[in-house]
Length: 176
Image (tube, rainbow, N blue to C red; front, side, top):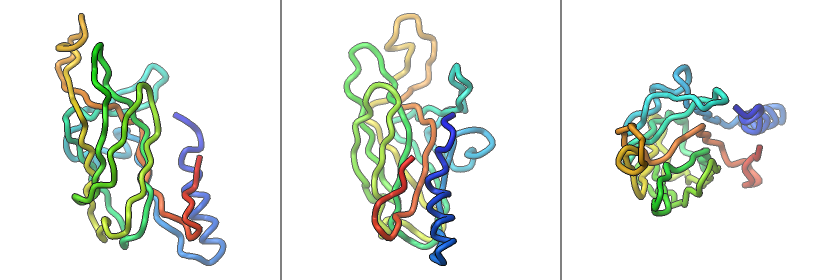
């Protein structure tokens, strides 16, 4: 786990609060059994650990959804760290991200972990529960694609964390 990943959102909120501005809400999901079991609503594996002890989940279907609670509709940034399931001859993996049926964009998932970031306009958000959908180009079972593999789950991409950050007044999201 990278130390300080949540710090940018917290720093921004504390700075705005200290200046008398509205402290924006930020959401951080670390994909672990203590913090995110309710949010992962469809298409996800059980929680797993890397050799270094970091928790993650697989999107194990061509579509996976997360349900998030948000306050009033505001412009926000959706950012997540993910990597594709790869096998010999696999096509490029792509994920299309939608919020409440509003497409936010389609993004390639290069080999290895990478961070994907997309703006999400206020018009896409609801006050209350919101559904974030990830649609993948493929989801395949390792045992059908990799010699000697015995995992029968269909896998699309692994997810380490997801955060939703408000867009500050200057329009520039906080960066780690």
